[in-house]
Amino acid sequence: MTEVRPFRRDDRDQLTDLVNAHVAAVVPGVSVSVNTVLSSLERQPDEFVTDPWVSERITLVAEQRRHVVAAAHLLRYRPDAEVGPHYRDAGEIGWFLWHPPASFRPDTEEAAGLLMSACLARLARWNVRVRHASGDLPAPAVYGLPRNWPHVRTVYERGGFRHTGTTEVILIAWVSDLPRPQPRPGVTVERTPGACGTRFTAHEAGTPVGYIEVDTTLARPERHVRAAGLADIGNLHIAPGRHGEDWPHRLLAHAADWLRLCGVDRLLAYGGADDQAGTDHLLTAGFHELTRTDRGWEHAPHRRTSAPDRPGPAG
Image (cartoon, rainbow, N blue to C red; front, side):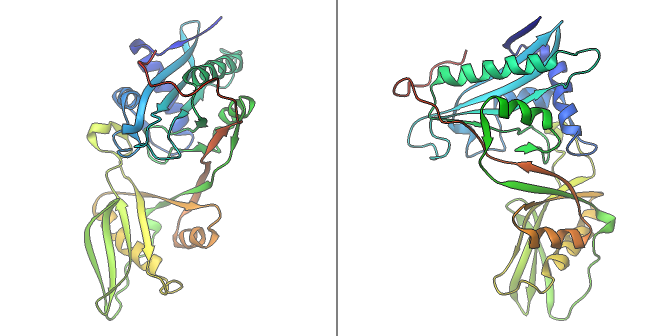
């Protein structure tokens, strides 16, 4: 029999195994600790804008024969004016995970269906304005709904969710394969702190041309993420009018030189599926497509039962 119930602390090891099984299908060599998973159920410190807007959180699990085979984390956002319009009075399945059927657990698809029904019932009870879904886990590059999770996509679509947003390409490169810096007269590169990591700004004749930011803190000790040797590109910007001059490769070369000194051997990058030129720049520099992820899932429109109620205690 399948039991769908709220998460209990003694589920933590099985839930972490479930999370890591899905993380491993997206990013090679990355896993998260029990502490990381537990902390993410209480708050998301990296989401310093949207996290304070959350009024309720609940994690549900589906258990079969004392084994957690599926789990989902739900968020309810406040309806007041302080909250951004997209999130205001919204309910969200932050992530939904389940073990595909196997010989020793053949009926997990039924459990996933029951769990989705429980999620929809919770969203209906909250009586939110709109219902969103995603697959954001507390691990690098695991967000949206990765194409590596077709079983999750199936449950979302059966539950009435549709992809209405964008698709992003996630790329990865061996740092050793990236370009090496080549001196150029009149060009200097300045290294400073940036908004999303260490910033390398190229100047030509004293004028900024562009910059790249690389984050080498994906495996910060307090996160307990096993991602040693992994970094990502937080920003890559070229000044208007300077595109087509190979500046992305030059900036990437300087960043790669720094990453080698940091002991980083793999670098992640992100691009829009509709920005083929940007993706091609990365591919020609030595990156390879890792996966694609679909962001922005929304439930079919539904009729509210009444005016939105005020947030109450979770339960």
